[in-house]
Image 1 (cartoon, rainbow, N blue to C red):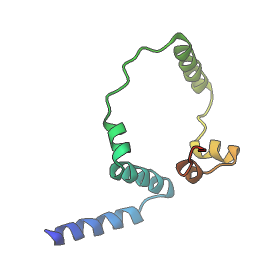
Image 2: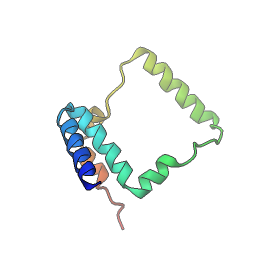
Image 3: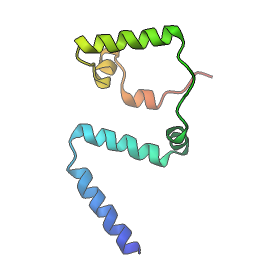
Image 4: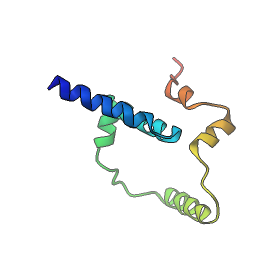
Length: 96
């Protein structure tokens, strides 16, 4: 049994070593969610079924229309333009 687990972990390491940098980030995020009980609870929470307010629906329509005519902006680019890193977001603590 322990031998099987060791073998599976070794196979996982080999697969991770073959990932592209962007894929490594995505897999890391997935593993963090799997290991964090709060994130897991959020991921398993039921979908929000509250109706959208008129202003929310309008904002979504505007965003969808914008995307029809523009290339999406990657999250990493937005962070770079704001001068912050993903690590800073993950380590952010509200002021006391």
